[in-house]
Length: 276
Image 1 (cartoon, one colour):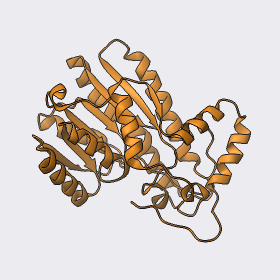
Image 2 (cartoon, helix red, strand yellow; image 1 turned 120 degrees about the horizontal axis):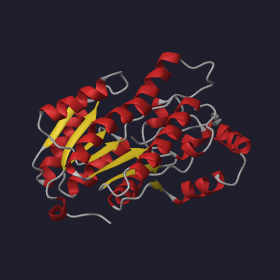
Image 3 (cartoon, rainbow, N blue to C red; image 1 turned 135 degrees about the vertical axis):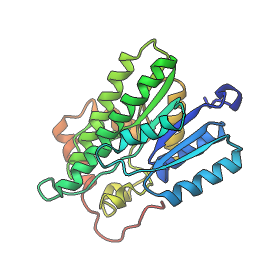
């Protein structure tokens, strides 16, 4: 259930990967409910444009923009320090930024994969560590980590991405248990293939998964938003994705891996790029 501006008492949310896709949609949802925003991504111009639009449209008290490449070691801690130096208390943390690379593991670039591990795993761990301590001092807070449906199954041709998302899901569920009855909740959002720039940036725009029935980012973000506000530990977004999650509990891993590999193989013939 969406909250309203009066209930928020002008709280602040920090969103990584806020310049497009799920991150942008999360920013729109929180702005609509009157939250102050801290938007983090690599694209300064896209962030500023989004921030100005949302602040003007919803009459927000404060929108902060932080340009940062979270795939670099130590940058997540620098972001935290910048937020703390500015005197901003983050009530809600959205660890959304993520990336993948398509291809056989023995053929993909190691440095790129190390950067993906940094972005997908180390960055949310660092940000969660820092901001969680602040939340515990106040006795309340919410954290949402964007995992994936592939966190539930092997992901050939995107082995590193799938492994990082499996970490995020396990990490989130463990923290959710640790923080029981503290006033702080942790939610893992598991979307399926979605109409964002992810596939194109991963070099996977030609794959069957990218050409299939993709979820819309706004719908995924809303599912995550509602689950976060309700204090749910995990939410699988979309009917098709829920069916995949159910099958992952029944079908042997070898069969799941074969199915995922088929989806991540290149589709022959014409293909279309994602909208974003």
